[in-house]
Image 1 (cartoon, rainbow, N blue to C red):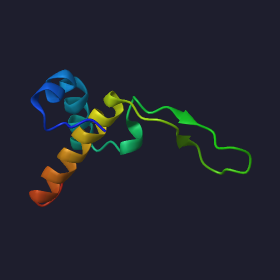
Image 2 (spheres, helix red, strand yellow; image 1 turned 180 degrees about the horizontal axis):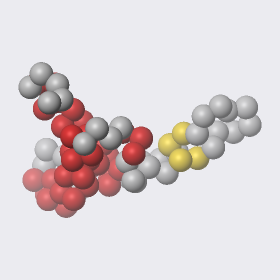
Image 3 (cartoon, helix red, strand yellow; image 1 turned 90 degrees about the horizontal axis):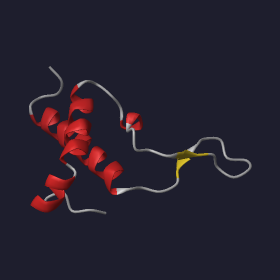
Image 4 (cartoon, helix red, strand yellow; image 1 turned 135 degrees about the vertical axis):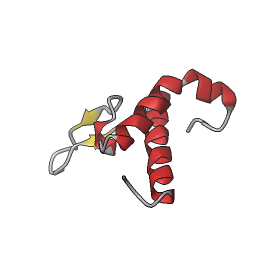
Length: 78
């Protein structure tokens, strides 16, 4: 997983970090991440699953989680 505390990575993935942060503030769930690639499970599986991750997917989720943490630290959504 990419270290998003490093300035280089925060700069490179700023668009995804900001998009994830904004999505969380607008009430979107983690499953709305536009970088998710859903795959059907093998026979007998009931739910689709994410098969692999990418740095952009991780950056979006990191931004989402930062917003979630920030909101919870302030007493939740306003």
